[in-house]
Amino acid sequence: MTTQSLIGVLGGHTLLLLGMPSQVEAFFQAVATPGLLWPAQVPPELVTDRLYRRYLLVDQLPGACAAFGALSPQLEQLPAGAALVPLLQQLDEAAHAAAAFHAEFGIDQPLRLVRADMPAFMLDKKRPLADYDALQGAPFWRR
Image 1 (cartoon, helix red, strand yellow):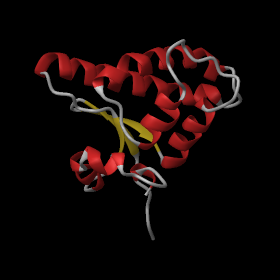
Image 2 (tube, helix red, strand yellow):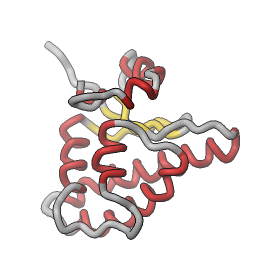
Image 3 (tube, one colour):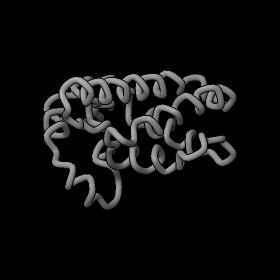
């Protein structure tokens, strides 16, 4: 019997739990809902593709945080959307942790989704960014 790993978001050296893969997938489907209003200058793909499948660097975090803030009240209006708002808050907190880590230490630790259970977390944490850049198909956290 295989079990699914919990999914978390890693920002800086902060790992925050998001939930089961199905919950995280439901969140990304919800934020891809047509008609949601995104902040000017923030393409939806920053969250719906870059964060979903890869990672965000420190220069992308302000746009992501602006999107998280704009999407929160809109998600609450969607069916079952209120249950997804805590995921948005966790993503925002992790983004701020990554930015603070960069400000404090001058190191860009990307914001990315990871499997939060050991030993999968250690493998995901050490995965080179080049692997994410070359990724085809499902994101690593879905595998």
